[in-house]
Amino acid sequence: DKKKPLDNMIFIKNYVNNSINKLILSKIFYLVSNDSTSNINILINSYGGEIKEILVLLEYLDSLNIMFTAIGMGKVTGGSLFILTKGNNNRLLYPNTMLGFQTTKDSYYNSEETLVNYSNDLARLSMMFSRYISVRNYEKLQKIISHEERNIYFSPKEAIELGIIDKIIS
Image 1 (cartoon, one colour):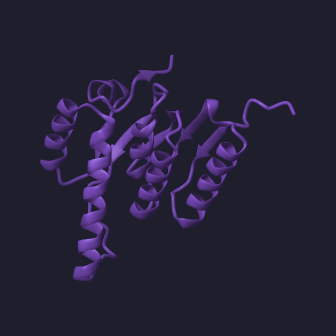
Image 2: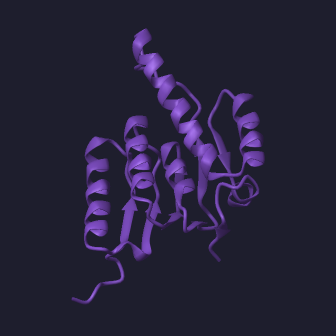
């Protein structure tokens, strides 16, 4: 059984909602169950996703304790940026990639309970994110985010300086 070069590649190119996340998780499960985990590459060109779905994906990857390379291309914003930082084998970025945090609040959160749950999810994401980049750089990044009321974008060079990625692909 000869493997094709793209067998161990997962491409995230959509907003990560429940149905997209199920596809991603099933591909990861397939790779792990077939012992194809030696070289998993996750390519990301996505503008984020639902917080709960991003958390499920990140926690599933943590639970498997597998090594994978995360590669950002195009636009990597919101929750997709958290997936990129999770790459524990290598975190790579193409030179013209746009990285960003979406710091604006979603307008459909209208009840107090929903806002509390949303805030708790954001806190969990923030804690997970801090594990993937150095503490010094995380504090610098938190300072930038806390003073902004709008979306924040980073160049690949800034992403290296902040410890979000390891290398720019040349």
